Image 1 (cartoon, helix red, strand yellow):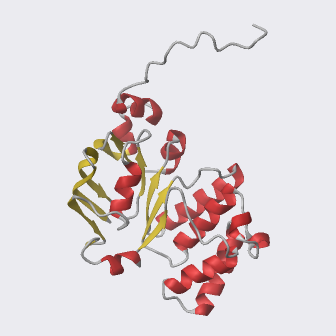
Image 2: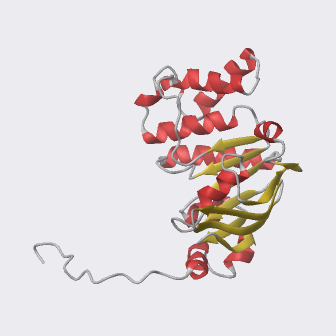
Image 3: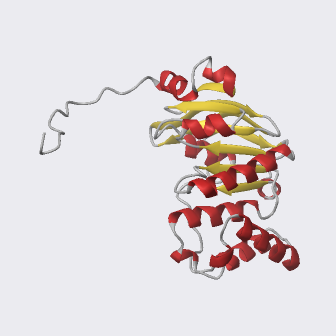
Length: 250
């Protein structure tokens, strides 16, 4: 589904992503993990056409992302980090606007919008301005916008952040069904338990470099994913002296 070759990005003299090579199979739930500042969001932005790389290339369904961006956008649904939406619109209006931007007819947009609002527990809030949504509700309407055009590939940056357990189960079920039907999901998260539970493949990036990639069991190498992740990215950082951090009654 996705092939990445030599992907590189500098910000000034800092190399945020360094010669990254990655293959993401069609029909996989692919975890993309790394510590803060590892280059995850930068990589995903380059893979989806939001940020131009300094070197390298990305192919989605056999097409170069940067040579044919219009064709690729129709194939990808994106839930970015630090999501910004037209939040003066209601949830219903935002979904309608998004669907129409994708060239869908009004009847299909209306039907799918209703389905998504119901599935994600937002039916009663569909006429409320997105600016008045909670963080979790905003994340869910962003996910609805990402899937309304039925893409082949979903790229989701922290899709479970601020999501309650009931909604998280619903979203996991939706994504699982999407993958079983042949869709592909790239899922970035800091929660190793979520990645280990949902994903069949994982890539670990640190300091802009790919440390490991492949099936979960192969990357974990006999450990739980969190322990293996810590080993791959350099172990637990040594903390400074905080002996003063005690309750006043101690």
